[in-house]
Length: 79
Image 1 (cartoon, rainbow, N blue to C red):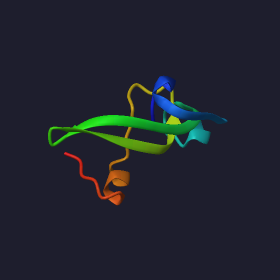
Image 2: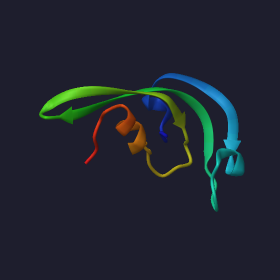
Image 3: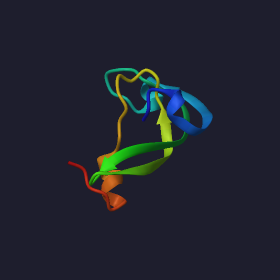
């Protein structure tokens, strides 16, 4: 989930979801779009690009959220 639309390299709007329709409990956030995001990370002293497909655009969140379980399924590790 990304709070800035500017990070998307491929983007499309989705059916607007908010509150219960966005699967949130005791709070509100919006899902307004979906697309692809490419992020650059420094790994073992080298830059690596990671592509996130089906990334959600959620402008009302306070920070970006990355699924650690998705990293695990892709064979990546997090520290």
